[in-house]
Image 1 (cartoon, rainbow, N blue to C red):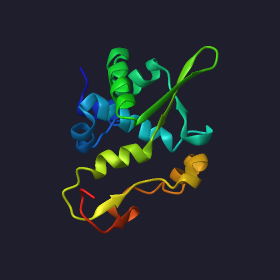
Image 2 (tube, helix red, strand yellow):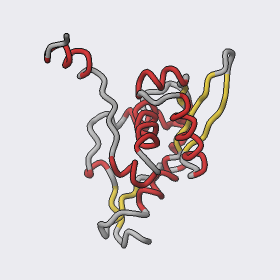
Image 3 (tube, rainbow, N blue to C red):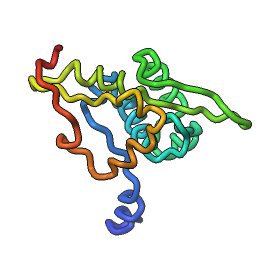
Image 4 (tube, helix red, strand yellow):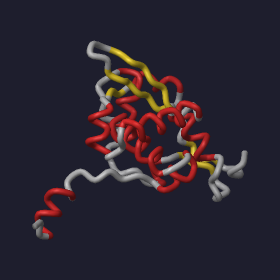
Amino acid sequence: MLDKDAILVLLGDRPVAYHPILAKKLGGVEVAVFVSQLLYWTGRSKLPGGWIYKTAKALENETGLTRRNQKTARKHLIKLKVLEEDLRGVPATMHYRLDMNALAEILNSSLAHPAKLDWRIPPNTRDSFRDFFRRRRRRVSPRNFRIEEGSAGS
């Protein structure tokens, strides 16, 4: 029988968090968890151009999403043009890249606040994607984003 200290040690180490807005805008909790995990790893990857690689087993260990859950989430994200995939290497490993501009468009399209957050990554930083996130290791807050004046629908 586990006591409360053992539970904290076992389960308090690496929780997977997601933002509910991702679930609402992207099509469900599984998709949001998948994107959140890719967002976590995007800033930590050593691959150029914002690519990361993960096996289905590694993603299942990290998120609890089964191979089938992942496949469903991936298909949906590709349809939304938020996710790019590339199968590379021997043995083959799936490489992923989030299109942050597409994600920003989806999130910006639904903001209720009249000011619109500009989450787009300038084109000249695409190759230094990893550096973009490394410079922002502090917690993300509304102060980290530029604010554009205008309505949410524009």
